Structure formats: structure tokens, C-alpha cells
Image: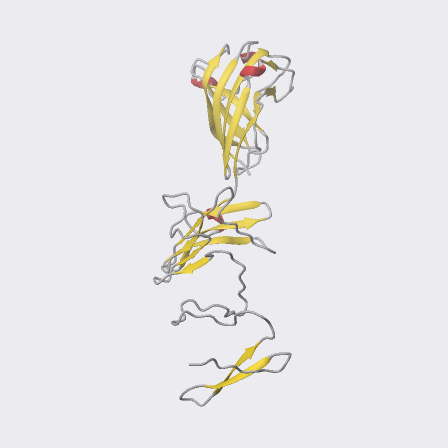
Length: 293
């Protein structure tokens, strides 16, 4: 068959009208005034090029996206399951809904919520929400075991603080061996667990009941009342009236805990430790657990 040439206007855009078979409906092909291949096919259309889709553009210089016969989509590479038993990068999505993302030298998934605080990721079972990860201006919270506010874990912190003994009448000027006086804590939600070592070099001029400072202010009970036993010293050295050990009790409206030696005899069991119970070489090692904000 010889070539068929349609000569359009010398400039501008040419329009070719073709009557569709069976329907007698006219279809138009618009020919741009530009040099290049408009359509190119290998005969069955599998390598048809030059056909644009509204809203989709491409400047890829290699295979950028593949949709296979199983309706699986692979982008940025040819590995079907990047990061699963391999170090390949890219994205792969199965038609069942499972997605795989892998990246070298950065996070593989970035999520952002604009305008308001609220759910960033929702988890569901059989279409019903069972938990979420929420984002706010102060950070994220994870809802575990339910979707209510009470299920939100919104605080976790690890750190150190410098434990010190003072008196509730006179704070005093107690001094310590700095290398042997230290404290670490873990805060999960409202629960604080604080471990400490205190090694005195001089008990100083404190007076009254003995207090230890805390890394967070206690809360959750009636103001001025005790939380009950909240800690225990695993080691007590060079301290009087400690035949059984030393406990600590935390007060709701004070960022400190009272020392309560467990003394011999029931009559003295509820008395707190005082300055006279200390020596210049007292050493205390213990842990406190209490509720905070």
C-alpha cells in the first residue's frame, strides 16, 4: 500500500475527521503544528507512545512505574518487595492492599497533618477503629487498647536529675560526693520511676523531717496528703535507727518525698527520718515510683 498523505494548512493545527465504524459517529484527531512522532505502535499497541493522559506527565529516563498482569504496581525500581530480605529501594503495592517502601539514607514514609490536632494514622479491624497515632503541636500520642482519650500514651521521657536531701524546717547546706550522687528516671505517661544514689560528705545544718527532691512534681491525690509508700532504699549506710530499712512517701503538693525510717518497735513506725538520723557519711541507694502530670 502506498503512503497516504493529508496536506493540511501551511500553519496552525490540522484536524482530521474519521467516521467510526458501525456507529457512523465522527471522531477527530487533532494534529499539532510541531515536529515529532505523534503515534508509534508495534502493531498490537503494546508499545504505543506519544499518547498523553490529562494530569499525568513524565520525564523519566528509565522504567519508572510498572503495572503487571496481577495488577501490582512497582515504582522506582523493578524489585517487587523492596526491603523485604533485600536492600533494594523503591515502592511496591499489591492489589490486595499491602505496600512495601524502602529507601536508602532517609525515612521511607513521611506523614503530615495540617491545621488541627487529631488522628494522623488510624488502625482498624474489620472496618472498626481500634487505635490510632494522633498528632498535635506538642507531639504525638498513641492510643492503645481503645480509641478514647484515656487510652492515649502521650508522654515518654528518660533523663537524669541530681538528688539532694533537705529538711522541711531548714533546707540546710548538706554536701555530697558528686561522683557517687546521681539520679536517673523514666517517665511513661503519668508514672515516674526514679532511681538514685546519695553519698553525703557532711550532713550540714538541715533540720526537721528529711526530704529528697524529685524529678517531677507528684499529682493525682488529695492536696497535702501522702501517696503512701512509694519507694524503698536497697542500701542504707551509716544512718541511725535503720534496723529494717528506709521507705519514702510522696506528698501531692510538694516536689519532694519524705524519708520514713522503719525503726524498731511499732510505736515509732510512722515517724519520719530527721537530721539526727543522718551522719556525715550516710549513703542511700533506692528507687521511687509515683504519679505525676
